[in-house]
Image (tube, rainbow, N blue to C red; front, side, top):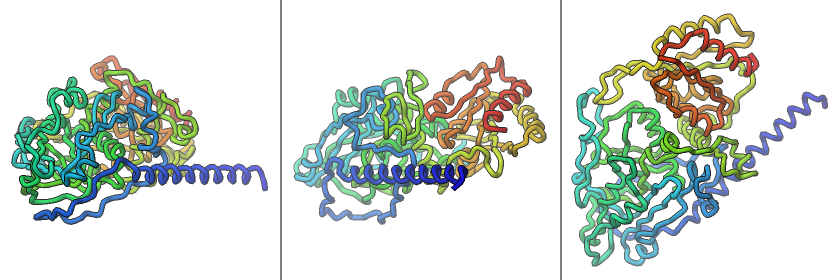
Length: 504
């Protein structure tokens, strides 16, 4: 056997070992999920009307997956796992499942994170009365609601909007106190904390008053979105929904209910891909009862947003390295999340960046272009790079005759691409370049060893994408402008150095 064959054999054996460990981590942790705190069995109560049982999507096998439930007692305060993984280690039993099992009523608990200062709450036998939630219907076509105010789209809960079955002989009262909310679901700097208000609205009702026109048997995630048409803020919502599902040990991907009245957007495509189904709260025709409901924190409460105002000193690392040598300063959770997005669209997640791709290196230029984003938007996108087209044209001309290896410049007009096409473009890119803007948040789905080059105007010096690159372990470069004009020669020089580092 010659040296080349020996090297190839070693690589194959390493890949086999890596995949074997990934399978072990995935199945061992999912087996542990079935040993989560006891939930009461379904009662013999016959609902007047039942939702058809939906086929829930299973969780995909992800190379960067690490267990969520088995190590919670060992998670240190303000560690990377506490920020990005399961730092929700304090379980607060409001109505314990064992008590609910004896009474035949519902149960409720919250998982509190002292690091993030927020809670993931869940409960069983909870009724939602959409007629007592004041907000627009939601899910309409954008062109049909142009000009609608944001206040109309955000929920306001009347008494009885949400109720929990208290069993027989229970006097109606609120589920939690103001003191509980202040301690475990604090509003902080959030002016309108919709999920806090939702939890405040939950009342315990006597079984005889707990009438349901429809039952949803599958675990369901309640989500309220702010800045729902913005890619960065939507990624924070996706992350909160994903973490909430994992923290509560859901065996399959849950259904979603949007407790807001926003119209539909292009971003819904990813929501539907990641989870098992989607409905808007006001789209239910009457009272609906959930066998198991999970209330996700707001996107503002995730580390992706909190990292903009507080230091989160974490760096991305391979999951296998962290499995062997845990490190409080490193995380693989954003890589796991990015793989979840790619897998949801059916893309392979075991791909690794080849040193010299057969079809050449893709340089993805993420463009900012005009489009109508939401009912209050005028259709004009604020320019962050005043000569963007000139820079793109210069790169195209330069790349056509400057490299021995094949290099493709991809025109990332994301506003006119489906979400699946956008994710495909991100995973196929060796280099992602663009002006500071929400579209760069897509780098959460980038493959390892992808290089980021951000062009930053003097007006938008914010750390969003430098931090995401750091937390994912991606190589990051920035060109800081004095205004909003970039000299094409400067961009070409920086990109030339990056391509040399890739072997071109």
